[in-house]
Length: 223
Image 1: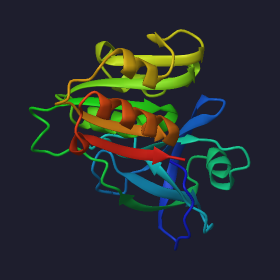
Image 2: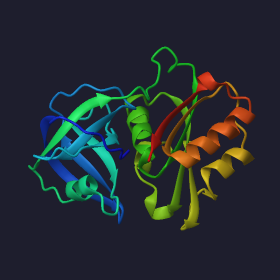
Image 3: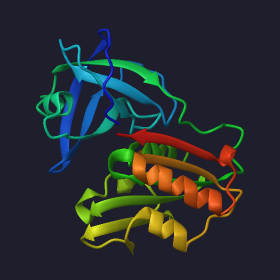
């Protein structure tokens, strides 16, 4: 997530590490500082001493001693480029957690979930699944190249469909929306969509056409 907002300074967190995932994405790991969050929420992060902050979904699980987000480096982006240059021990500012893209504890034991992500939009689903491993879920991850399949280790391989639209091997050649058209969803499924806005709007139309009610559709748009 990378929407800009004017902000006041946040709490100071320290960088553990920056791990490159691809030429355009990386994982930023911070100390936890006893921060309490719900899997699916996001935080605002900015370089230490800067008023610029951006929103990033939390990728780490409830039980992790660290806080981690996935970041897509935006060409010309002030925050995403600066955060990638951080070294262990550097200070960053954090606000949050924020957002309601979460699962209902009363539904987790019985519901069936469909998670649909593009790019780094897979982050909140990694947090959800690692925090609640007993969930009955299937996840579709849409990427342009196989090298952009992030956080796959968080998921049961038998429950994951990697939709690769351009280069490299995946489980399905094409976009996640094409997969949804070819593989209709049971209307009782709780469907969570995260990533590119165009994908989310198209997926909404497909799922609604398959009979999924509005109150079973949840979305977090990355711009």
